[in-house]
Structures are given as structure tokens and as C-alpha cells.
Image (tube, rainbow, N blue to C red; front, side, top):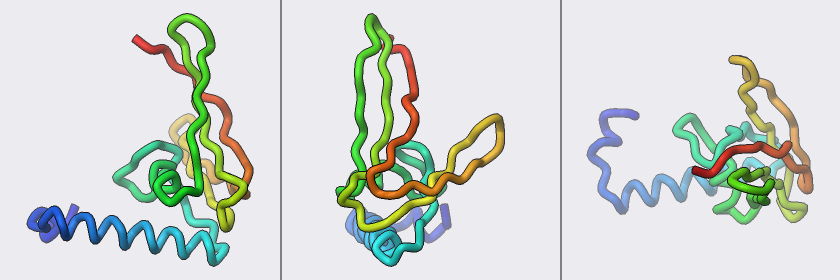
Length: 112
């Protein structure tokens, strides 16, 4: 975070976030396949949560029984273009281009 960002008003922060989303939307519409972090939220750049705010993605969840759940993200067929998904695997970053309609692999976790 930059020092000047510490002094932004709430209104300024909202405007800045909206500008970032508009830039992301333009990039996807232009077919640039912007890099998206494989997370609901990330301080390191755009993530699935940002795509969800734009109406380009949704999270699917299902029970695996007991206290176990599965999640995956879907780049909706109505999304205007591709993205480049950044996945961290064994300490390395792997890039995967996803087209509208593509889905991530299921991830499993326990609900406590």
C-alpha cells in the first residue's frame, strides 16, 4: 500500500475500487485475458470476487457429506472474454487461460 492511500477518504477508496473494476472489465471486453488470482479476494490484484462483482463469475458449492464441502468457480458463458487464472501449485505460479463457460477444479475443505 502506498503512503498516500492511507489518507484516502472512504468515498475516495470506493471510487478507486470502481475504477479498478472498470479497467478490469475493459480488459476482458478487449480480449486481453487479464491475470486473475485464484482466490475470492487478493491484495495482489484482481480475483474471482472482482469477476463476481462484474457479473462475469459465480462460485458453486456443494456438500460432500458430513462436515465436508466442495467449491469451484465458473467463468460465466456470458463473460465477454477470456481470463488468465494464476494458480499457486507447490510454490510455483501456473497460468491457465480460461474461456467463458470454463470452470475451475473442485477444492475440498472441512467446515468446523
